Amino acid sequence: MEHVSEGCIRELATCDFVGKRQNVIMVGNPGSGKTHLAIALGINACRAGFKVRFCTAGALANELSEALQESRLSKLERSLSKFDLLIIDELSYLTFNRSRSELLFQVISERSERASVIITTNLEFSQWTQLFENEMMVAALVDRVTFNSQILNMNCTTSYRMETALNARQPRRS
Image (cartoon, rainbow, N blue to C red; front, side, top):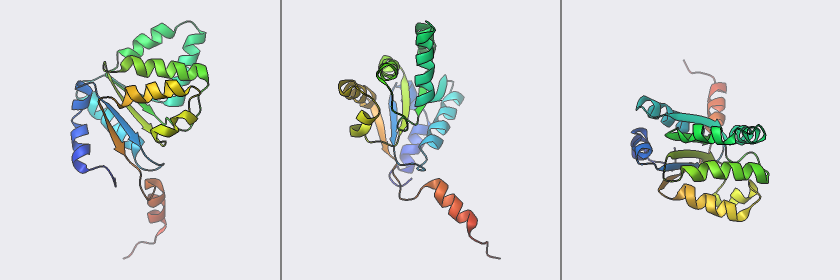
């Protein structure tokens, strides 16, 4: 990873951030390893005895919306609050209507200083207004998730997947 030191990765791998109820925000272009690192940290957290949940932002928004429609939102929110670490992947590919934005905001906001969140995104914070309709809510959301957080710049010049594909096409030397 071009902008993230090995020392930073090793420190995160200890999962001390989960015990300290800190967040990790991974910002980078596609193929930079955000999801891979988030999953690895989630596995380490499980091994350390923490309760972990991984989901994409879109799937979580859908689950929250369905729970609201089925009058079981509070039950789902209680369930989510029991996780020491909630990993929200791909907060950048889908836009959310006002209702789904508010539901996601509520879950993330409730976790503030109570439990950890890892968020992976392709968008800089200033571009989160493209995802959510309410600019004031975006400002509050960014304020909450960045407080007591580690923000990783994971932008890279070459996508890991692209690099792997290109290397696979090169003939092997004997």
